[in-house]
Amino acid sequence: MRMASIIGLFAVCISYIVYARPFAATWDEVDFALALDRYDLLAMQPHFPGYPYFIFGGMLVHLFVDNPAKALAIWNGLLMMSATIPMYLLAKTYVEQKYALVVTALVQSLSYVMLIVSQPMSEGSALAILWWYVWSLERALHSDRLYVQLLPLWLFSVMLGIRLSYIPFGIGILYVWWKRTYRLKQLFLYSLAALAFQFIWIFAVAATEGDGFWQLAFSFTTGHFTQWGGTVSTDEAPFRQRVIVLIFYNIIWTGMAKQSIWLLSCFVVLLLITWKRILIPPLYRFLLVVYFFWALFAQNIEKPRHILPLVVIVSFFLFVGALQSSSRLHLTVMLVLLFSQTVIGMQAVKHQATQLPATYQLAYDFEQKEEPFVLFTWEETRVLEYLRVSFPHERVFSFDAFQREKAAFPHVKVYVTDHVIKGFQAQGIDVRPYIHFVRTYESSLLSDPVYGRITVYEWREEEKRE
Image 1: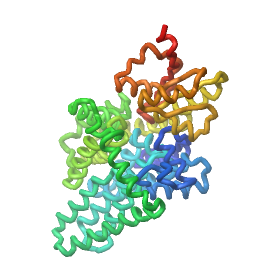
Image 2 (image 1 turned 30 degrees about the vertical axis):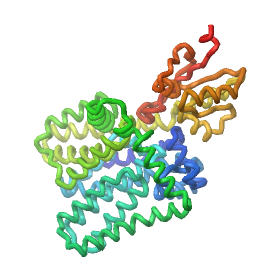
Image 3 (image 1 turned 45 degrees about the vertical axis):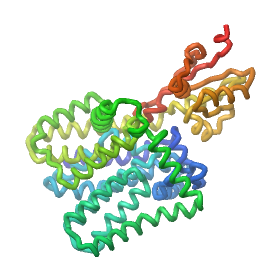
Image 4 (image 1 turned 90 degrees about the vertical axis):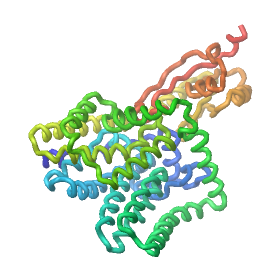
């Protein structure tokens, strides 16, 4: 098992470098990629809150890698490789040392995690720092040294400077303070230290943007929770459906099994032979419960990547529970799972790095059209701008705005994407008499569940008049 674990870890690490995704195929990925050349929050390079540590790491890699998207993905991979250390150290406290590397390899080879880490998004880096942060919390629970108590405060700051949505994990610091029964004076001093660490990156970003930073912060936060953030307040689906999607589709089917029947079967078998031995310590139960409700109420469940912290922590203790027994059955299932996850994960990462995303296919195909036309899109426009396409394209949300914009392009063909059509339908517009199917562009819905499939229609109003 030890040799298999070493080979698995090596394969995962190699894939992070060789198959780092070179495409900025979504709005957020374009924001991050553009930030490596010019950091400007007002120009959405990147969007709020700025992700300074993630962008800084990407800039360092960008010195050696020309492609900014690939540079960010490689930075994710490098940080995730470093997370092997805290994973291993944590595993040693829960299983025999000879099995600690097995647990580490199994967590590192989770196929969906590999896929997301290989993207130019901040989740990969944040997930890596989360492992260092959790390890530091464990140390702080059992040590009186000052630097050990300050370490999780600093790592929490770094984590939020990479991905602010991981803020619920601050409950871990409060748990440590509660268990150590600090005096009021100690709590006050540690609180000041925690704030000081946070202000390092907050003030640095604010200084680059000037007075507009705080207005931007308010605008972005309001928009996330009330308009486009996919939170429970903006989701029209029933709450029960939201819970089911989060647990069964996002966490289990996508996060753990990567939508693979084979991987799901392996996890089911592992759970059946292990469930009596699964024990999650109180610290991790607090982290899981708080982040679960955060993901349920305040995150976009259309994007399963938001549940990665839940997936890795639950999987970690599932593997730990399985290795409480050294029976041949347990070790065989673990070996099969390790091999399967690694192979399926590497295939997915390679596919993601080598297949053109749907947004790129759309751009390149429409570049070949000779007749005059205009393309109306939703968020795809951000990618089209990044690729510097030569044809006219406009981003529209409302049907009234579409009518006005369309009038500026007389006597040309009008194309619209399916996301625009869905937006019109949500506004009560009957679009069926106007639209005619042209083509569907597909890549991976796992890599991009929102824009992994784009359908284009031609808009013909003259037929409606007939």
